[in-house]
Length: 398
Image 1: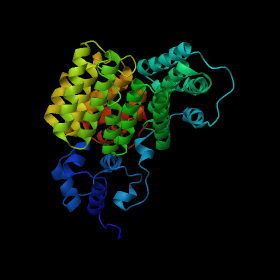
Image 2: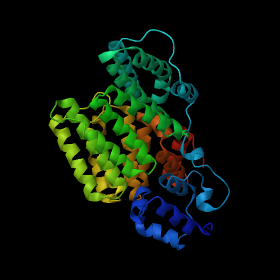
Image 3: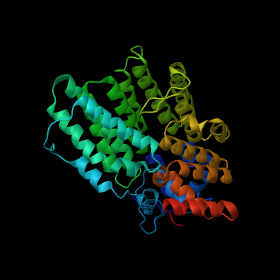
Image 4: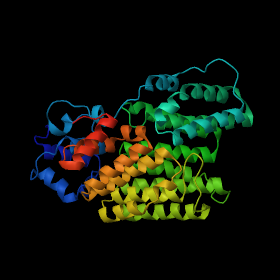
């Protein structure tokens, strides 16, 4: 095939290859379908670097040269930051042998995994906090899952899946996508070997995140639907919460694909279940509950490019009700994304700064916050000054 000759024709080719309409692509980068059409037709000039990076992230393009036809610039070199301890965590994840020693009793192992999740949710530098314990915890969990028998082995496998979920969160938004896939796959394998519906449901939730990030929305839907068949929502609060979280995952996929009605039907099911679990309910490590549903509704509205509704929901969401610094920071970034959809730059910078106070690591590693800080740092006045401070704090340069 002949290489497309202009930026617009390249953009259109990548958009169509990704299976996205102009409205969907526009919504995912905070613009309209008409804006995308104007780019593709050549009526608008090639966007500046921050928007090019945002388009490349959404379209799963590894190098900006594929869009611009100019010199090579790996997208991950700007949008993704590696953590200093990633090599030790990667080595533990990729180890093919089980370390020597006695297995850790299941109750002790469960307590260690709970402590690691507490570190993740309560620290403002969560990656640094969990990196100190992840390699040893992976070794302990794998050794116990291999050497225990019967019910204890199944329980250890479920804990191993939880450790891999934590590893997936740690390596997410770093320039090592193969580690993210490895963590998701290992977690699902452990959960299936445990023959535990709750573990499989959690593994599906995290695997769906990976599929959606790779623009494989239908694959994300399939893994969630498959897990849903295994969960009995009449079997108590735990399985009911897992079922509801699967509905929330489905809503995120439908919104990313621009399927408005399906997205809100799935979200309504999740939200109704969360309400029945109680106004103050929050799952101890998955963090599902009414507050999480309300915060994710902002993401849905933003992905569906409904700027007014996205901002309305963002402004009415009680982020302090989320019992996790990392979740509060992540959802505050989504609130900033909603405000930028309406060009409300002062509000966006304020929300990004508030997210930074909750979790430095979350903001530093989030691709959207990095490109937004880069984009806003060129603005005149207070917005530009604050955005440049933000960019400096998270390690991006204009």
